[in-house]
Image (cartoon, rainbow, N blue to C red; front, side):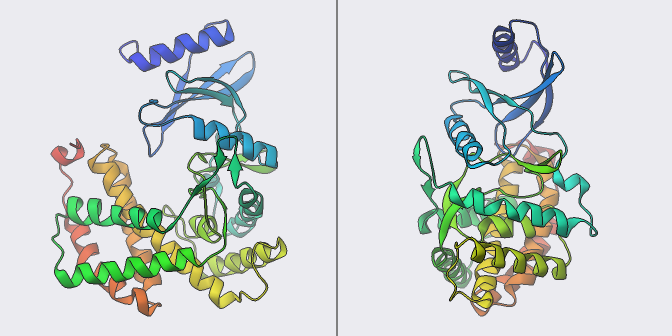
Length: 343
């Protein structure tokens, strides 16, 4: 960062005023939105400040959910100060080590059980000071699924759908939407995975929760267990799926008459919805925002669609189409500087 970055200059002035001393923010990273994060050291304490261009990324949802999650007992950043005009949020530092960085096949079950144990608490948060969480309804699900068509199929591989393919996609998306709407709705983080969980002493801290909604009970669990950035052995995922099923029954979040077969179908199809959406988002991040690194994550999301979708008759045709048509075209597509720049 430098004096040529007007937002960084404004951020530094705001922090200096808050601390009544000169502090130097150090860039940590950006995320998949237009947000940037900085770490600050001041008199032996660490802080995080987020920079969110207010016309692109409102800060009020983050602040509201942070308060609600903290009140529920979750380890989350505590908001210390905000600049509503610029979109700056000063918060406590809950850790710098992502859970993903320490996971391996020997410890993943233990760590993921810890992460799953937080979900009933997250599920209990259904409103904030802004009111009820947004409803993740059928229109919301369909809108997310269309990101795959708009950005991966149409934009990234420049593929023109046939009438038969369009009909097949419509039927597939309808089946996935029906499955999502058939599940009990709970408070949902909506981006719950190992990059958004931080090691904080003997517990896990939760971040990046500003998009929380009221949605299907399996969504956060499948987001964690079928991570878009890393894939774990099927037997471990199955073990953890069973753990989550028993956990939500113990917390009375799932009726006793819902058997594991029904739960697993919800889980699998919810995961497919998320992976279809994620593949489209990764393409959008490249073309619209110039974030090239996310292209490397597209093949894993497509492989989930191929492997899991083949087991379900209502998804099998779409799964085979992704395997034989879409995945090869994604693999063949060259990365050029002109497309990297976005438009």
